Image (cartoon, rainbow, N blue to C red; front, side):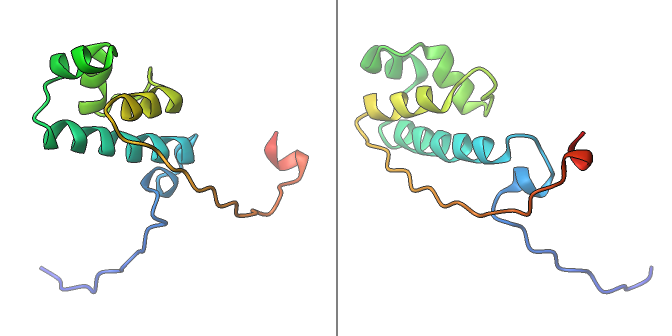
Length: 107
């Protein structure tokens, strides 16, 4: 077996962007919010049914968060879940300008 040196590749901090996925920033935000929801549920020993009874939010939404299935859950819904669990969300937005592509390259 050859011992070739491994190349170290640093990620951007957003795995969705690193893999060129559409809506990478929204996906990353949803993952961060879901992480906070899961931490709160675990810290308080809450099942999805107990979370439903405390918040009035469907247990299915909590199950989707636990399973990282965000396709049918909006950022707003995730923020509402966090708020009803007794936490608050503070979001800081940082814009980075990317070079604009010409119209021909986008089409």
